[in-house]
Length: 252
Image 1 (cartoon, rainbow, N blue to C red):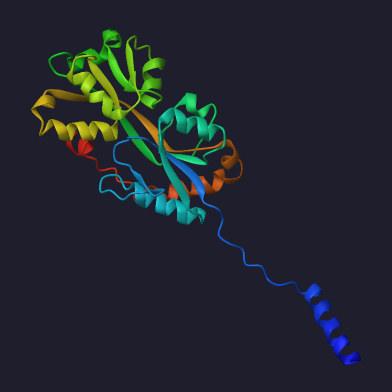
Image 2 (image 1 turned 90 degrees about the horizontal axis):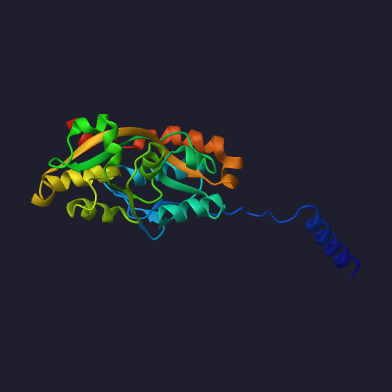
């Protein structure tokens, strides 16, 4: 009886000295956002879907591997994405063109791509030479609300800016002559260029490259505070997965 008690006491003491090993689980996924209706990128079941043109899925898979974590994605309007990231409800958003206004309250990662912006216009309405004159700033122009293109127009004194909430609302404005031109990001310009080749309604549209900006990820203040260096290293390493030989650049 005494021996049994001694053995039991030893087991209890041993369990106190050598606690059971605790297996750490994977870190919780990060919360990411993409711009709703942005050409070339889509989200299904919280994952960015593969596509042949831009390599978004490959870039994100590389970023997740470098950070050793998963990212749950959702599509939201631009203004909503920026607000939620500023409030630390999202950790990062992609793909985002960098602007001074956004830089004032969010942390940009190292650049992932160099993105071109284009004016899309009807040849009968605007001549390319007009883009070198102040007169161009008096032409009505359509742009997506909250986009880097909108910030460019405002900063550079364009007087008549018609804002829409969805990229797909832009082309009808131009076709119906509600604006004289559109200010669009490169993926949308490429999409319109493809339509020009097959659709008689857009056959007279032309493109004019007016600006090149850095683009990549914006990080929330909380996420950037402890992860900026690691994120920047990941972005630089993952540039190899971007596809930059676009249709427009091949033709220019």
